[in-house]
Length: 209
Ligand code: SAH
Image (cartoon, rainbow, N blue to C red; front, top):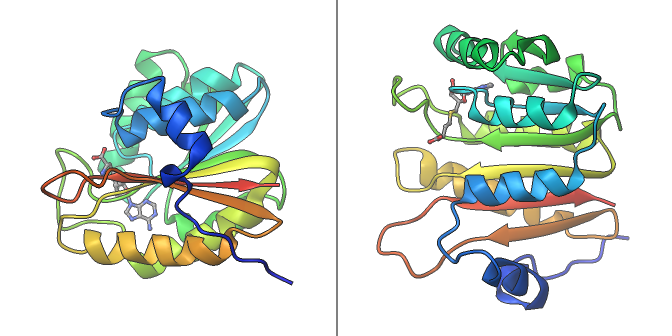
């Protein structure tokens, strides 16, 4: 039996207090890193589903230590090259396996219940082709696989970018996908500012219990 709870806990107690200690302007990517840092341990397996320019990949590789492993997906060769060179520059590339392919193949690469975290940073590659974006249908497919890949206590972090062509639809699809997950097996939290003139990026967190 699935129990439904309100999803937007940002408007209730815990998250509000946690956020208040930092800054109300904290960017969703910074918040995602803070939440991930609390979960990740040396030796963990983690997935970066959208390597882009490698910022999240680098963060994850630093957290999991020499005995850890990062799998980083991207469909663009340019993004893989950019990420690889960032990781090489930081001397962290040996902790990372780059996969030039879609995150919708995640289940081919990761055993169920094995990953401590999966990170999606949606939208387009900054500095790259803005027409080449993550797409709602494929994203939702990959998110389902990410949930299976997560181990108990694992965290799925999704940064959504409404406000660009395709971005509104994809953001809405992620929110709709996450709602029924707030049941005894998962805990979902949406961290979103409501006071901006234009739609601001926001963070969806799903914890496997
Ligand atoms: N919007 C973020 C960066 C997103 S980068 C920011 O502003 O920082 C998103 C990356 O996802 C891009 O590099 C793109 O190539 C990649 N991508 C798009 N579809 C994908 C898919 N199906 N599988 C894996 N990566 C994908």
